[in-house]
Amino acid sequence: MAETTTIAAGRKVKFVITRRERPEAASFTEEFEIPYRPNMNVISALMEIQRNPVKSDGGKTSPVCWESNCLEEVCGACSMVINGKPRQACTALVDKLEQPIRLEPMSTFPVVRDLVINRERMFGALKKVKAWIPIDGTYDLGPGPRMAESKRQWAYELSKCMTCGVCLEACPNVNDRNSFIGPASISQVRLFNAHPTGEMNAHERLDALMEEGGIEGCGNSQNCVRSCPKGIPLTTSIAAMNRDTTKHLFKQWLGM
Amino acid sequence: MKGNSYLPRKLHSLLGVIPLGLFIIEHALTNYSAYEGGPEGFQKSINFLNSVPLVFWVEMFVIWLPILFHGVYGLYIAYQSNLNTGRFSYGRNWAFTLQRITGVITFVFVAWHFYETRIQVALGNVAHEDLGSHMNKIVSDPLVFAVYIVAVIAATFHFANGLWAFLVSWGVTVGPRAQKVSSNICMVIFVIISALFLLSLFAFRGDEFASTAAAALSSVTVG
Image 1 (cartoon, chains in turn red, green):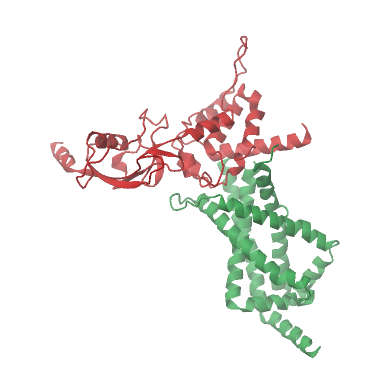
Image 2: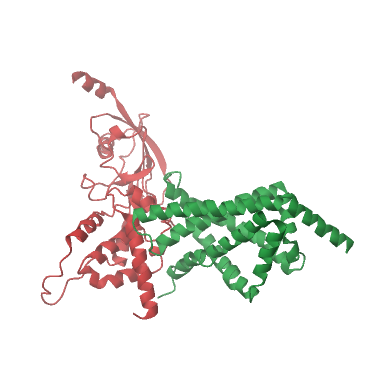
């Protein structure tokens, strides 16, 4: 045990971090070497850089900025590109990563500073598709209809979405030339349309998916489902909403 | 429904299968008759197609206009996509990327092929009876032959993979299992149609079509 601690004490973890000072500034990279500690994750490494912002060449620099909150992969705040793949920094364990560990912001989103990005478009998308269940009234509306347990089980998987933005970063059709809303909010339409009370407003959400930049922007690359940290069946959700919007389209045409 | 990208994109997906998918199958079968029946077999197929009533209007509405819309809007869709197989080298992402690359190849090839064949017939430079020998002349150039091979494989992949995407986009195949099965079926379609086109291309290069070419040439000289 003492021996392993000594070996660990001498080890360094190497990081290459893509940084930028302001949203409109050019990006640059800086290298860091951080003393290894057992069970480190990317967040604890970033905290170490924050305590001692010195580059591997010995030069002083500003602490690297990042966002994080829950540290257990449920809030979605610490998404970044780690060794080329978008994922959560909190569950990126240093022992399982190839070195040097390369950190980049998810540049599909506007970069605020260093690894901090602005995910506002995702919250805008949730508003656009009305990803909520309207239950407010001027009087007590009473209990809603019950949900079948078999349905609740798969709907629960969809409810794990934490709006982290990894699926948008992985999607080749989410970019400046394309108005595609992204996989996350389409899956949320499926979630809220599956809810027995939410179903009462299903057509409003389908209408939103059939607007400019809606569901038709999906090009079936299926990177989203491979990248989702919560294992949400995003491509199944998209195909299910393709089916529902198609039905909705024909019903509109036939005046049903 | 407001003016937006939903309907054109849906129409693009539909036209790729009906009628263009049906057209590519018809084209493969017609060409295959050159492999199966030689110049006479190919001529019979051409005569059959020319016997279709209102053939010009059928070509116009079932082939030319759908290709024009599907091709031009498809170029716009390709322009709107990033290609990120470097970071995400998954099979489906490769198919997504190839769908766009083969689409652009097919667009350029179809324009060129249409000029070389249908336009030449319309201009009176090539008679229907000489189409076999005309194709023989075209594919006798090894470089052009190679381009034709690449282009028909690209076009066939674009159709087969597009059929898979059509089934997803219209909500027919929803779950991962359905999409896996349809993907296998579409790849079988890709192999079969590619084989039909390739066999016919090799047939057009054969001596049979060359001799009809020579005969046609000599008759022109004599005439």
